[in-house]
Image (cartoon, rainbow, N blue to C red; front, top):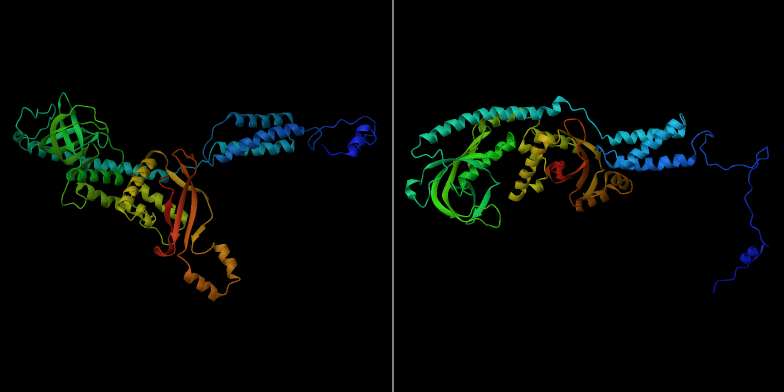
Length: 463
């Protein structure tokens, strides 16, 4: 049952009347029309200002979320700007409308993205890489022509390998040990596995096959030399290469690149590679005496040239996170792999797997800086965070007022090594000076007992 409320009964019966707010009466005695207006009686109504402000706040939120990247002129953005524009035309000079206009103009500028003037110095690394590649191309072409002449002079060399001799109709001794020049090698695109090893097939059922053993040590040595070329000179190389190798046997294989083999087995000639030529780019040979198992033509000469071109050779011991980033990007632009690796946290370059990952990330950086962006800058830096071994600098200063020297020394003695981290938000600019993408987060770290507390790249790469 609802509770009995006497006041409600009296009010309904008319015995009690509620006070009403007194309405202001003008001097002429006419009733007042209540209107919600701005401070200016002739200015915009409050509902007009609120309506424009609502859409403008939505536009501002979207523009800020871009964080420097160029945004789309969406329907909501168009409505917000149109409403502000209409108010300016209807109420010219009104301060409240002008305040909306200032906000709208700032948001419209954010929509266009952050821009930067790209200087010739910022693009110099691309021109230098092109120059180095052209210089080495001349060396490589001459070395390949000389090598091919030697192969041609070798007794029994096969310069026109297809169609291949049929292994079922020829004696193995007639081909074994002969050199063959094979074009159209696509590694690792055409890779297939057989007998626990990796091969690439050159040919087709109607012309016969050569199976290039890409698991062999000579191929790996020559291929690693090509990879060093990509890392130091240029990663702009064609997909199809030429390989020179020695015929060692006839084998029955299924040359399907996928996990599921559906083609018929084919008999082909097994080839042990000796050299790789990337047409017009680099010529590499297997070399058992070389510490890497292979070398490319002009490698020693180019190493000397590159060393002279380096503008930064080490990371300063007292480098700030911003300075570390500058050295890091410069090392990648100048193709200084050793300096690039020295910028990375030592804990992330201990094992073979970690080193392989560093190389892969370096390759990604090279491709990105060759085509996607040309300059990197810090958009925003988060505060330094103490991960271990104490408090932030400001907190420690505060505690120092209340702790004596002995207490602080005792605490420091039993504390773990201090580890600090900072997150940098990066803008990547393309050659037109516009921010390429949304800001990238890069974490740097330093540890008191590692290399005199120097900053290192910790997480967030490649970007």
